[in-house]
Every structure is written in structure tokens, then in C-alpha cells.
Length: 282
Length: 102
Image (cartoon, rainbow over all chains, first blue to last red; front, side, top):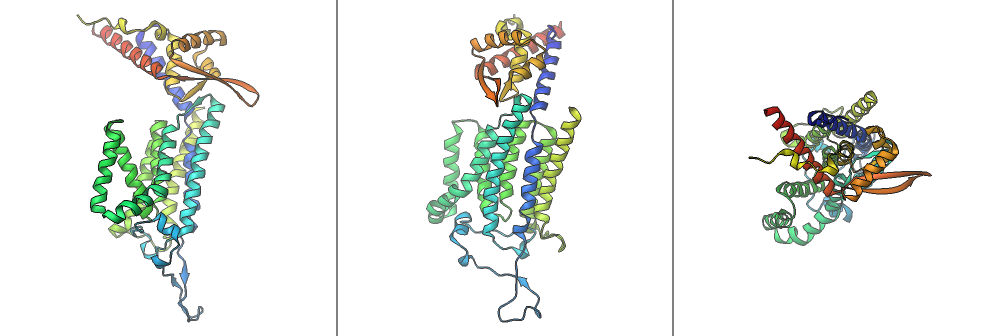
């Protein structure tokens, strides 16, 4: 190592860059969550029914009708405000408890796998990525929609009305976080609260949890491919949840899988590029 | 007259290998002894001595454990270590700016 300040700063910069490159491990979470998203596709397949009393061989099946009152208690707990239907498959929207359970289990297992992966990788290469922020964001985004939103809805929003409850909730969050940390922290908590709400109302809401967790991961990884992938993924998640509002619907031939396949494709491509780049720099 | 930037250099941190240890440790949650040995091209004995100095100054914490049957030594930077590193880098940049302006 050199002694002159300029050379020293250059060498330290190179060391930091190498340590950062060595600790990167984002491609596995991308591949894992890409596959998890893809595996959710069957849960969104529309169910078709033949009206009772008609011959199934003579009548073309229609998407099954459903009634909120007939849904089990778990559906109402997970979606206290119901579900909006802005997704590009609006015409076939059908609530599905199996999809809710799948996402809860898959996101929890995915979170544990990612934390384990970074620890395992650290043992192999000798440098560990700090995963605390990722863990905090993911746990927050799992617990809040499962417990926080239903309880708040039941005890506060349902009784006071959202016009009163929403400003009070925002004021409490701001008051509780403003002095503790920074303005950025307060804004981040408000965004996470909003995302937790979206999770309960949007058909593809669980993808918001993925987007938030992966944004935390991108912040830790500080890598261009990782950040760009998460940005495109987040835009895709917004699109698949909101496109119907703007009159966009997938073509008939792909509507059963496009809303999960497109975000999954983004993550898989990001994971593959990251993995290839890693191999090339070895 | 402004203070000379060399006044901001801390003897404990300024030693180039210790600065290297802190730089790598600041980029990670924790770093393993053999990684540092390889990255800094130091012998185990030399690296141990530098780590002891940093540990005694409260700039890093050392954690010894096993990975299977192999002993492993991990090191992570403390808040004091991060502050000392930031101050050292600022002093080095100030020194460089002053040198360039001469």
C-alpha cells in the first residue's frame, strides 16, 4: 500500500469496491422470488362454472360468480376493506383464499431463505452483507397486513370512518417517528403503511411486499443491476395492479398468467444477469 | 489561518493497513480474518497485531467461532470505528485538496 494521500484514497476505494463486489448475493433472492411469483400463477386462474340445471355439454362454462358474504372469515380478516378490481384480469376477478395462504407461506419462507443465503455466502467468501434493513422491512410488511391493518380496520377505521381515522393515523405515525429518526425514516414508514394497505386490497398486492423487501435489499447491495431490476420490478408491480384502471387488459391468450409471469420474468432476468456478471468477474 | 489537515489524522487509524481493515469492515456487516489477510496481503501475525490495536481502541469488535470444525475469526466495525474512518477519510481528502491548491 502507498503512503501518499491520493494513492491511499485510490487503494482504499478499490478495496471497498472489491469487498462490495465480493459480498453481493442479490441474484439468488431474485431467482427465488421470481420462481415464487411464477409459482403463484395457478392461484389466479379463473374458475369456470356451468349454471345449475343446465347440461354442461351444451352450455359454455362462465367464470364462477362469487359473493363476499359467502367468503370465509379468513378472507374478511385479510381483506377488511374488500378487494379492488383494477388488475388487467378484472373481468375474471375471483378472490382466492388459497392464493392468500400461498403468499403468506411463500413470503415467509423466501424471507428466511434469503437471510440464510447471506449468512451461508458470508461463510464461503468471508464478507457478509448486512441484512437487518431487509429483514426489518420484510417482517414489517408481513406483520402489518396480517395483524395491523385488520385490527386497525376493525377497531378504528370501521368505527370512526376513514375521513377521521386516516389523518389521525398519519399524524400518530409522524409524531412517533419524526423525533426518533429523520424525515426520510418518517416517509419510509408512511410508504410501508400505504403498501400494507395496498397488499390487502389489490389482487396482486403480495407483490408490493416483494417490491418493498427487494428495495431494502437494493439499498444494502448498492449495485446497479440490483437497483435497476428492483426499479423495473416495482414499476411492473404497479402496472399489473393498476392497469385495469386505465382500461388496459391482457390479450385473452395470456391473461391467465401475464400478471404473474411479467414481474417474475423481470426478477429472473435480473437474477441471471447478476449471476453471469458474478461469474465473469471471478 | 485554517488548521492543518494533518491535525485530523488519527495515529491509530492512519496506519495504512489499519485503514484498510476499517475500510473493508465498514462495507460489510462482518468480515472474516482470512479475507482481510488476503485483501491486505499481510501475514496472520501482522494482521493480528493491527486488529488488536483497533480492538483496544474500541474501533472494531472481534468474534471467534467455528464453521463446522474450522475455527473462524470475524470482525465487525463499531460506531466509533465508522466515525474514526469517516474523519480520517475527510482529513485525507482535505490534505489532498490543500496539496492540489498549492
